[in-house]
Length: 485
Image 1: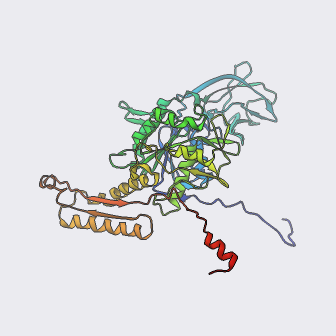
Image 2: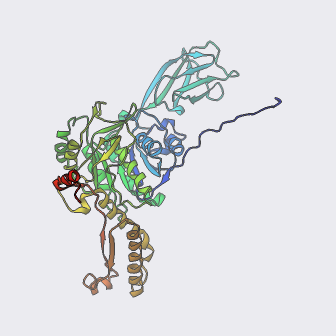
Image 3: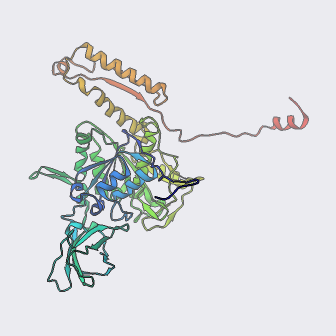
């Protein structure tokens, strides 16, 4: 043992700050993941995966910065690295039993008993190692070990006691996942009546039964610029499980729309005009990484909610974005001045501007300007209405099937008004009230076990336009010169 005399310094690894938690802004993200890097690739196919930390997401789904191939990694990076917010529900549709390509007889060069398979997406379970003439197949964990190295490439290490000779020439055959074989239909998904299994976007309906979490935002970065998928996400966010509502976050195709003047026409022509949708243009970049704006915006909204007691009353507009620029799909940089960005806002499009740092810009849902109703026009108010309805269902679900008497009605009215007063006192709403009236509750409805309340909610509109009128005052000038009062 070394004799110690003097001063010794030790360093601990930097502690990872735990993500802040949200329940109103839970993201449900549909796309593709590098599941060949996951602990159990087959367990992450067409199944909602709940992740509350970066490590959970990486272990369950793998991680790669090849965002074009593995779109779920955009939201992993945005949520856990850029904004440190959780939880996130991921739905991976990349199926290694379907979306794969076979590679045979690829030569492997060994140095000091180690060789690298130079391919991306290798499924380790499919690897077969043979000698040069194909007469001998070697056994994993007897003749060699196999694992991904730090570059996510499979590394073969020869076991000295095994059957592989030191100078042996070897070949390898394997399957590799092929993200190019994933189609829009895989993202949309469906229900298989034979197997009783859901896939793709249909799995949104399983999020609440599995995790007791209500989806807050639906997105499919890398895919939502396809109108078929954008419209499906809009539909899936309505009456989830017959009860809940949420918004979706969509990208406008910046590989086609390369000028801001053309964005509004693309949006209208492709029916991105729903009050449930947030339409975004263009993409964003972080260093050399190009991300779909939807991944960053959804993570930003979740972070804003979590920072405001999980009440979604704050608009995501004019909030700082940890990005280094806005770009088209091909990487061409885009710099919008405020008047140009405002013109996009006027067409129901959210963008980003560089105003002493990058920030989101736009309060309107995709329904604007076709609607000017505040609850359907403004993102913050639309989300407040969805959230209020969702939380009402959760708060009073236990009262369903109780005796329909005055005590039940009174308890709902009193509890809800008390809840509203709390949010009003915190400045999260302007006010809310609930009533039970005879006009809305006929005798036939009551006999059928149905009661109806009416609740009025005043959520705050965003201070979108602040005007300061400047006027020259000659009296101040003369008083200054002549010393008048």
